[in-house]
Length: 182
Image 1 (cartoon, helix red, strand yellow):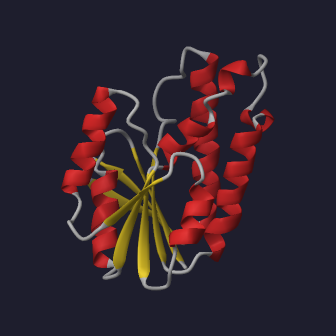
Image 2 (tube, rainbow, N blue to C red):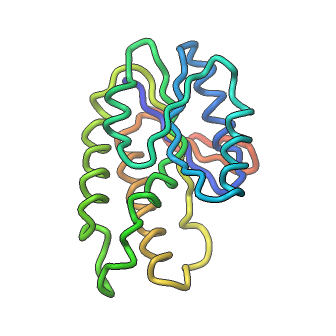
Image 3 (cartoon, rainbow, N blue to C red):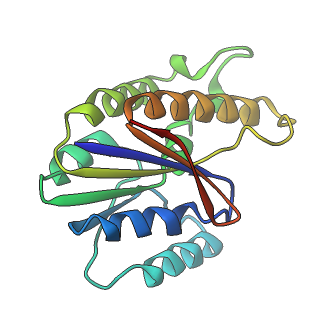
């Protein structure tokens, strides 16, 4: 398995870079989409991403059960492009408002189970995996506890996935900067 994490801010070009890497793999590509079209604006974003992809690419939507989907879709002759881990994390934190003050996401069974499953699954997958995630820790400290929890868990998830991937790239202004290349 070859795993690659591509990080960047909003509109940084990270999805375009991931698509370029998937195309360069020469393998059949399956996009694992984690976004849900819960409003018109998000539905338009999803349509825009779909329109930008090559016609022969297959798409599987999985807002929560990412590890299960990866196990099912991974194959030696396939490249899986996961776009994106940050939206997936958001889906896992839907019950976070019920947490007592000061509690972290470890108290959420869905979050803990799905995150642990992903981290256990990634090293065992055949084929090529390209993961996209937002780097959300470069800005201001969020005003609300839920925002701070999300930012903290996104940073922890990115660190854990980066530790498993032999290649990690940060994209800014459409320019890829290789952070790790084993």
